[in-house]
Amino acid sequence: MAGTGLFAEILDGEVYKYYADGEWKTSSSGKSVAIINPATRKTQYKVQACTQEEVNAVMELAKSAQKSWAKTPLWKRAELLHKAAAILKDNKAPMAESLVKEIAKPAKDSVTEVVRSGDLISYCAEEGVRILGEGKFLLSDSFPGNDRTKYCLTSKIPLGVVLAIPPFNYPVNLAVSKIAPALIAGNSLVLKPPTQGAVSCLHMVHCFHLAGFPKGLISCITGKGSEIGDFLTMHPAVNCISFTGGDTGISISKKAGMIPLQMELGGKDACIVLEDADLDLVASNIIKGGFSYSGQRCTAVKVVLVMESVADEVVEKVKAKVAKLTVGPPEENSDITAVVSESSANFIEGLVMDAKEKGATFCQEYKREGNLIWPLLLDNVRPDMRIAWEEPFGPVVPVLRINSIEEGINHCNASNFGLQGCVFTKDINKAILISDAMETGTVQINSAPARGPDHFPFQGLKDSGIGSQGVTNSINLMTKVKTTVINLPTPSYSMG
Ligand code: G3H
Image (tube, rainbow, N blue to C red; front, side, top):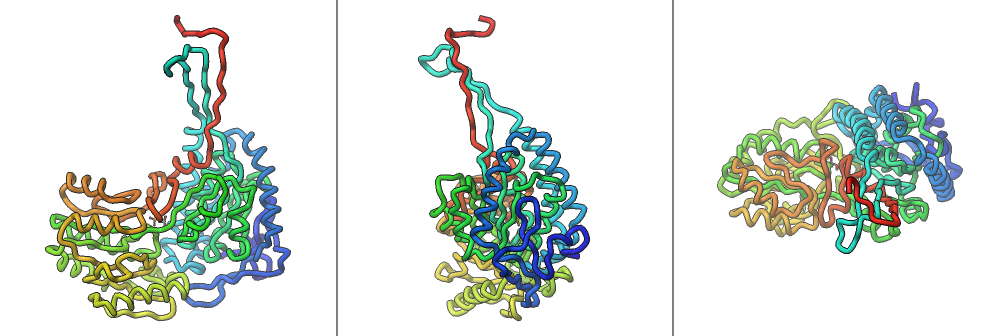
C-alpha cells in the first residue's frame, strides 16, 4: 500500500514529504496541496506546498552535489541506476496504486508504466556507459591550410543542474526519462512533479534514495505551480530544463535563460487512411490510438482523415469496437476511466458541443458523469469545428472524410502541432511519400502513433516541442562537448 512499509518514511501523518539533501522533509510553509482522485472527485492525497526558500536550498545542494557526481566513475553511476531500476520494479505495487488513485490510470496500465520505467533506467545506464565512454580524435591537416600540428580530443561533459517537469499522464515514466539520462551524464537533478502524479513520483524518488545516490544529487520539490513554477524554471542555478506538458512549455521557453531545453508539448496526431488499407487493422489502431488511457496521451490519434470511398466501412468497424469498450473505475481495469480533472472534462465537453452545433454526426450518444466521459466517435467533422484542430485529451475521436491524399496531408500540416502521425496503406512507396510530406516529428506506417520503445527518438515539430527525446538523444541533450587541443611545435605524421 502507498506510504507504508519501505515507503513509510515519505509520509508525515496524512501529508507526503518532499525530498532534499538525501532526506524526507516537511515544508516550513505548514501548507499542503490536495490531490483530487479524478474518479471519486474527493481528496486522495496531500503533498507539501514547498516555498521559494526551499527551492533555493535544493538548488544550492544540487550545484555542490553535481561537482562530486561528475567525478564519480561512469560505471559506478550506471551501477546505481541499475540498482534504482531493480528497487523500482520490485516495489511496483505502491506506485501503481497511486497512479490508479491520483490520475485514474487503469490498474494494469499503471503496473506497465512502472515496469517500463525500470527498463528505461537500465537501458539508459547501459547506453550512457557506451556513448559517454567514447570521444573523438581529430587531426588538423584535414582542414585546408593546416599541417598536422594539432590533435583535438573531444568528450562529453555534464551541463550542471537539470530541472525535470513531467506531466500528469506518465508521472513516473516521463520523470525517469529525464532523471536517468541526466544522472548518467553526470548532472544533478531537481524534479517538480505534476500535482496529480506527485505521490507516484515521490515513491519513485524513494527508490533512487534507497539505491544510495549521494545526498543533494536528486531533489523532489512539490507545491503549487503558481507559487514555485516560474521561480523554478527561471532559477539561475538551472542549466537545462526537460518539460513535458501543455502550452505552459511555450511560456517556459520564452522565460528560460540561455540553457538547453527539451520540450514536448502535445500533438494533434492525424491518422490518414487510404483506400487500399487493411480496414480491420485501421479500426483496431484507431481504438488503441484514440481511446487508450481515455485519449489522455500526447500521441493519441486525435483526428482520422479517411478517404471518402472507405469512410463508411471504417466508421462502422470503429463503432462496433467502441461499443465493446468498458467504462468505469480504473481499479477494475476499465478501458475508459475518468479524465484527470473537472476542468479537463468541461473542456472536452466544450469541443463536443461545438461539433454538435456545427452538425457533426454522433456515432454514440454523448454521456458524462462527473469526470467520466463515455467514448465518442464523431463522423463528418469539418474544418470549421474546433475538434478538427484542438486536442481534446479525452475519449473523443473526430473523423474527417477526405477526397485526396493531398487534402489529408494539407489538414495535417495546417495544424500548429507536429508531434506524430500515421498512415495506413499497403503501398509502401505511397506511405514513404506521405511520411515525408507530413510535418511531424514521427510518422508511423500501419500503426497508431506511440512514443515507445523508449530508446526511439521522439520529437515534435512546431508547437509540439523542441529538442528530441529517447534515451540517446536525451543523454546527448544533457551534455556539452568539451575539446582539448594538443599543439605540436612541428608537424608529425604517424609512419611518415
Ligand atoms: O503523453 C505523452 C507521452 O509521451 C506519450 O507516450 O506514446 O507511450 O503513450 P506513449
